[in-house]
Length: 401
Image (cartoon, rainbow, N blue to C red; front, top):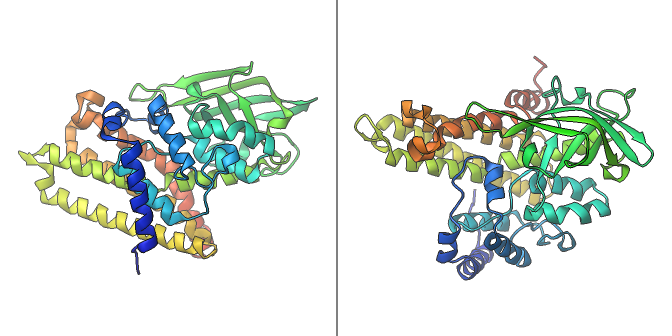
């Protein structure tokens, strides 16, 4: 396998490096240090300062960010080239420069609207989501309708030019900070389970919405439950056709899995654990000198490299317009499992100091948070066990268990 980039891409890397030297200097890095909190979406929200926004606008203009989004919606609009996207991500990470905003809006809603949204919806919502001026939450899971999402009971009834929505959502990430929600509601109650669901865009300031944060074991409230009582949603805020929201939601989940299974998260986590092993003592010497820890670090790096090369293989298939089929699900499953094992090693390194939280613990207490958050990666975007079943049945032809 030839994993070199070639002269054309080496020249492009040099171009990106020059742009970063000119527009994100050492002084910019000192004045805008990477966010030191723990919540991945909050960290992106916290970076919405003037310096970061100005830099992002320059990077978008050069075509380095949001390359797949047309300029008329606020994107960089560049020809599809996954290798250039990898180079941009690598160099921006090295320079600690603001990258694309992370979150439900830019990573899940925007690609869904590009595929399924109306022109009016694209013009109204995409630009603000890309720059992080409007935050989005995902109204999918309900009590009794989590893994079996098609069992949802939230109802939407058309009343003139509005949908009237009643129901409850739970495990809604950062709903208390969000301006909008993309929500699944059953609008055709007599249709089969996977039919009759519609995909609605709901302003969180609409009367009838109550958000109740869920307090986690760490004292934070990353998730909320949301109650909708006679919430009136403009009829034009439906994405796709009435009753076809399940197909729209699957497009969103596809992008969520790709987002959660990305290799850069694994790189950052592994680099953090290596740094942690060097700074924390274990049995009287740096943990990085312990042969068991060193062996586990080497194993994790080998698995990460295998993950990267599998991503390269999928990229090659995509560039050749080949359908990866169920193989495309492997990236999310493998990446989330790897992230969990990296976080578990971090906890083993800090040992009983892992019960300390944030500034009280080693490395600002990142190890216990990463360990607990890793469980979310195994669940979000499709649980690991369900994905294993799907790969086994559809990919390997094994019988249903």
